[in-house]
Length: 255
Image 1 (cartoon, helix red, strand yellow):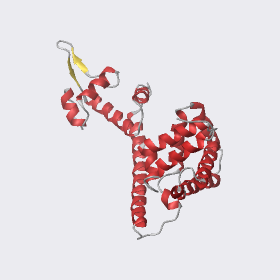
Image 2 (tube, one colour; image 1 turned 60 degrees about the vertical axis):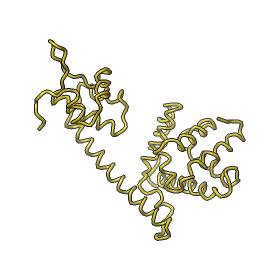
Image 3 (cartoon, one colour; image 1 turned 60 degrees about the horizontal axis):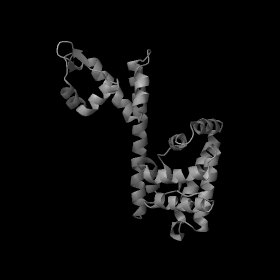
Image 4 (cartoon, helix red, strand yellow; image 1 turned 90 degrees about the vertical axis):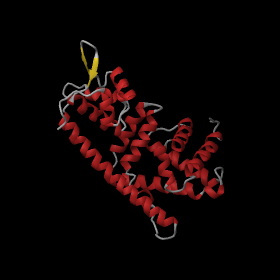
């Protein structure tokens, strides 16, 4: 158990691996406020501070915003043990997913070296339908939060068989766009791939050409999205974006 002794901001910084500047910022925004000695205004942290900082770091690891973390930790009925149990479940799930992704990376390397065959579905092993749906929701959120709710509604109304079929179609579209790379982004094959991809997105929410262009740019620039494409071909994200620009320009939409 952590000792009850007072810790200075520098000591806590060293202990938790968090910069002094970050701790000052957390103090300023009211997320982690140290106690103070009234006589000299000396700031110090206690065991309660350590536990709260641990929660902040757990939620940051799960990519919660500071505003979201503050809202969670400031709930009157916040239960630390319950929160830790949920963190544990989430971390176990993340570890399993990362192990699966590592296996997929190894298999893809072996495949590219001619040492191992892979089915189309195996290229996407580790990228669950839930994870891909979360990425799409995040993208939709940038334009209209209502799109996220509509996407959720449509997805939840599907049976597991329908979900599997939809994800398999998405994989096929991705591979078709990859196969069109030697023919160029303006080729009929590439443009058909983009049209099919837009049709796929339209199942979840109505995707305008402006949104399609923004999605293409996001998928190329965001490392999480780009990682999906890099596993198939390191140039696929860039090629897809170029093909999207051709597709949208033909409809009068440009950057």
